[in-house]
Image (cartoon, rainbow, N blue to C red; front, side, top):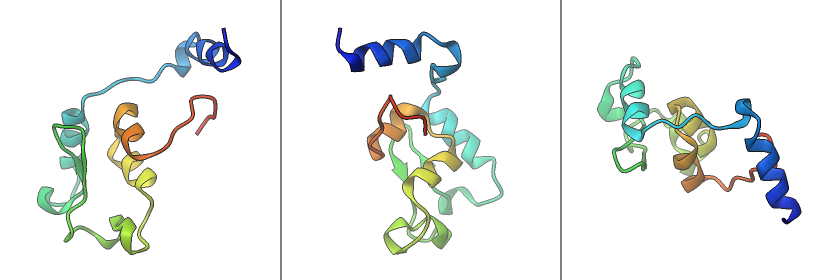
Length: 95
């Protein structure tokens, strides 16, 4: 077994290190409960895609010096499988 495989096995043998999975729609429902109108808030759609409307709060506009995608995904409570689509993650580094 490679050193990386051993490290991954070690990390996931600890219950507190196993990510809790949620569905993209659950993250979206959680987001819509916020005070921002749904059509102008970032959300995770049913396909697990991050949607940032152009008319959303400029703080979410990563393309115009807004906050990072990582921070937006964290605010939305995105599950690890969605975060992994947008952020290069390494299982050996605690983030």
